[in-house]
Length: 443
Image (tube, rainbow, N blue to C red; front, side):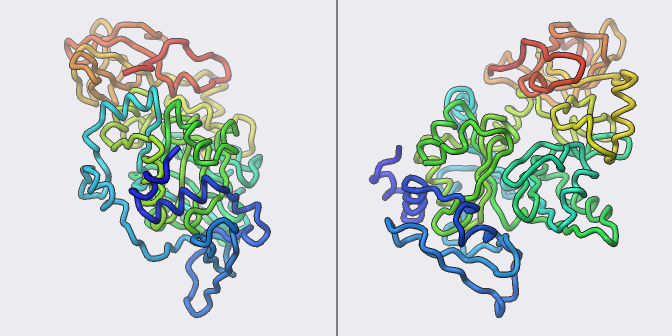
């Protein structure tokens, strides 16, 4: 719990957020005058209308919330008092030219917190795509692998966008809201996915696609203590809820959506908010004990966890079943893009290779060949060093029936590799096989 002294140190904006979530966290869709008032598209200033609502008698500092009368989601942030990047830079973060937080010079501490505590990662550089219109659910149902027609408001899922031949484009996290679906996608695919989805909107379709990345900020929480942190922030109503469940709250009079699960961990949490709220939220999470993690440590963690990434494991060279994304695929829904190929691969056991984790004896470059007795059996796709000089991890595709967990392979000419499962891949549930029990689960 943050003390009042801590709250005063981190600033008045953070104090207001702290008071709100400690005193009374109010789901947006539960308040009769706020329901459907979350983040509308920016309207002409002459027609914009402010709806004022008293949120609590305990404080006057967060009384008013702005909402448009024409649409239920307002993604136009109010003036920003404290820019998030300025805040983290002042705390010692190193930020790239692309405005990505690379490191806080605490990578080992952050990785340890993922295993034993709680970490917070700014994923605002990840893409956010808003899909709206009356036909949005059917549209996404037809364009990706998940069964959107079985989802309701406040629920979510992972889904995969694939080509017509089931080659992987990206793994997306989806939130089904009252009047839209928010997709969180990779930063390298956001633009192309937006263009692709717009391309498949037919004349009669009531669907609108909008890239709202720059209008929002996105944080993730992960680690075994993340549940306790949620309870401490009076957000414990989300603890124990199914993956993808999300609810709307208010911080300093600004909307924030908190959901179960994220790109790192099914047991973590995700936070979507206005850029104006990001600095206060970030400071509050740190005051509650979260350790900040940069993108360098996240990439190391991604590989060790076995999470495939676009341009590496998710390319037009590999299909969605080879990538092992079984939990994101509906095997019994109606026709969708790539379904024919996926059905045929399952029916005729046509998956020829699969993604594995590999312990290496030395560093290796992505793209290196994987061999057994001089015979090519696969290719390395990602590599990272461990926290010790002797630790080296990789991901790679290897032909089926040539290896199993614990098998020895050769990478390049003389690097010894030991095949291993990974936490992410071990959680996937193929229809005819169970996941291995051993995984890369420590650093």
